Every structure is written in structure tokens, then in C-alpha cells.
Length: 107
Image 1 (cartoon, one colour):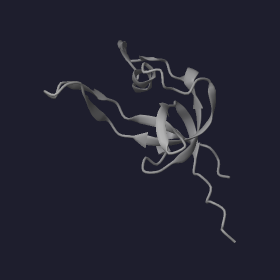
Image 2 (spheres, one colour):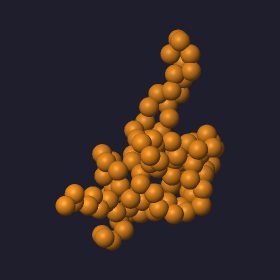
Image 3 (cartoon, rainbow, N blue to C red):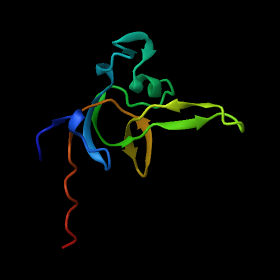
Image 4 (cartoon, rainbow, N blue to C red):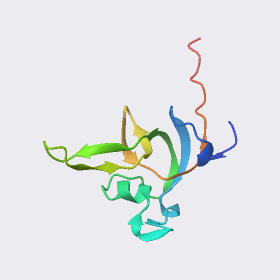
């Protein structure tokens, strides 16, 4: 398997294997303590991977969440989500990544 790489080099167009660590995020933005980090915004929903470990994850871009029929709502920041089956519902705080190995041959 490849060496673990920094998240700044991770591809954002496919699943990767990540090492996550919930406690490595400061929760408040270091430059403005009145703002949450992007990871913390997603953690507020309660659907995040606690502790640390590895997961298969994918990057999801920022999107607008509509709250009513008039278009009111808010933007949710882009972030990494862990795969569970075919769903990506659990936000994770990855610190390193490696590519997924190729699947076994059918021979």
C-alpha cells in the first residue's frame, strides 16, 4: 500500500481511504473564533464519525439548502463524508489519505 499523504493532495473526484481524527479539528475557526470550521458546521447535525480510525471517504462540494418555497436557505460548506454502503451520511475529519487498492481480479 502507498504511504499516507496530506489531505491537501487528496483527489476530490473519487473515493479514497482516509485516516480521520475528530479531535484534531479546533471547532472554532483559528482566525475568527466567532465562526465554526467547515467540519464543525457539519458536526452540528450530529452525523459525524467520533474518535479516530480509517474510512472510505469522498469530497462533496458546497451546496445550497433551501428552507422554504421562496428560496430562503443557507449554504453548507464543502467537506469529506465517509461511505457506508452506498450512502455518504457521516462527516469525517480526515488527516491523511491513500488511494484505494484495485479490486481483486475475477480469476
